[in-house]
Length: 310
Image 1 (cartoon, rainbow, N blue to C red):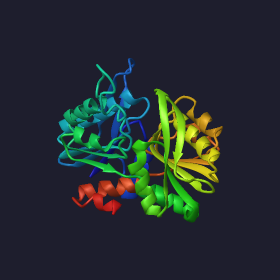
Image 2 (cartoon, rainbow, N blue to C red):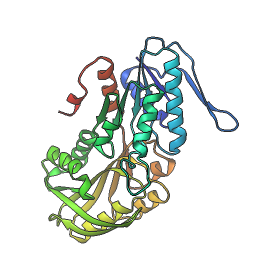
Image 3 (cartoon, helix red, strand yellow):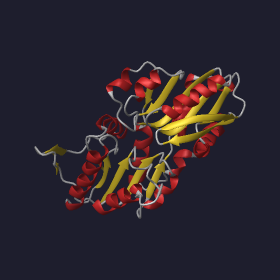
Image 4 (tube, rainbow, N blue to C red):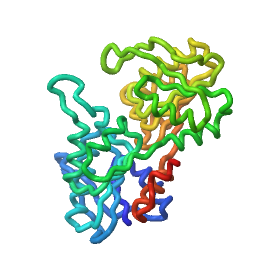
């Protein structure tokens, strides 16, 4: 087994390597003067089981191209099997035609990854589970819920906790966390007037006097989350925290979270945290290295990955 990494999240890859007691593979990923990407695999990979760890986060197109070119280099170097490990799968929000004459970009990216040489894909908390079907190769969609549940138990008394889905679409994820914590469930009913903006309309469930925990897969601008936190506090919640798998946090999101009524935002390191995120007063990052490392170990030894979540 060999681990290779691009430039998107080297710190996470190093942590995975530490868990597996395996050094990262020798590879050079650099750019020419015109920003064209060049990759050179600097060790023998013939007949090896290779894992390429690369989140397609900002800048998404650069990191996607790095992933594709690394896999092509490994394929041409006669690697036995190539697994694309994408802790965060970019373009996942474009999983359907949102209107006339619009693309399904998640399917296009899935095709690119397959054609570049991936034999299987490993990712985490896909925005929509059906994206697994966009790949014509085996795909493991890992769940961060066990990590989040463990962290909640370590930092909060769960007797007075209420799990809250920020929208109707996230109810399945919220229910899975509520079941693990044996906690009740509430839903924020909102109406989105235009992309990037949302207006909270109603809280379904009695949150008065509860420690509310919002859970979602992606936080980008942070507007939906901040509006939901304000609505929960207005409904009598004792406090509001948020647990989100992928901290995209673009634009002024970090400042918006810092000025919000959220006590704390907990995200994973599926996307490498920026300096602003690391220095934010109410944002904390937990690692997914153990989960991803164990899934990689089970894949290479042909053991069950789904049993990780039993």
